[in-house]
Length: 93
Image (tube, rainbow, N blue to C red; front, side, top):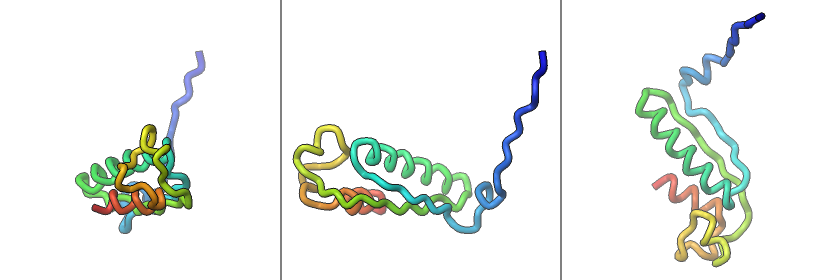
């Protein structure tokens, strides 16, 4: 049986960056709102470990409606706001 060693290469700028890593994220609906929450959790963990963290830019020009409240991470008070604005404001708080 021929077994090869698996080697992963990653740029040192991602391991020990001097500035936060830029993440451009498109879509803040059902999946996107949950992925942004995961990115927020990852950012917190990275910063606690001494890493520079993440700089997330979110694009979504859709507006929150009452139909979005069931599956997506939005509150009733956010109805009428842009999805991207509501989520980024929450993340920055």
